[in-house]
Amino acid sequence: MILVDSSFWIALRDRRDRHHERTSQLVREFLEKRWPLVITDHIFAETHAYFVRSLPLRRTILRDLLENPVVRLKPIEPPDRDRALEFLRDFEDQQWSYCDALSFALIERRQIRYAASFDPHFSRPGPSELIR
Image (cartoon, rainbow, N blue to C red; front, side, top):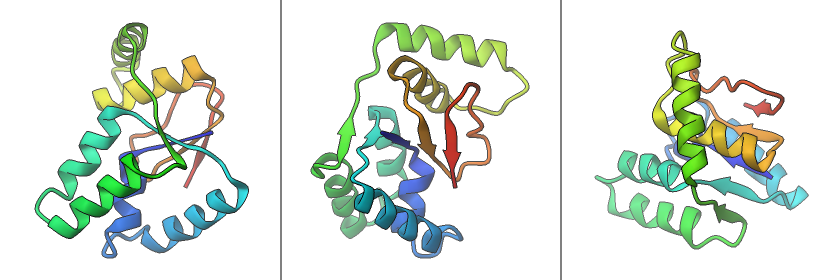
């Protein structure tokens, strides 16, 4: 499983993004290997908000993230929220968003080995590997 951050989805669908080509290549690799891609409601919300002014891309994001059998929406549970707040308190020197901290909590709880992100703040504590 790979947790896929909103920065990755944005790079995939925004052709102006400097990581667009790399993201397209990685998606092909993920699909070839049949790796399930994991998101949270918060990742969906961030990605959708980025494309909210473009109806065609809003529709694409809905298909990509909510109607795609490869993408799995994993729920955030109350212990994840508690752990996310611990991350934010314990790592005050990091510029993590609450969405990032929730992702880290989910990675930890579900023991997700990989995360895909181009967000420079998405440097997760723990043993998972960051794919860029």
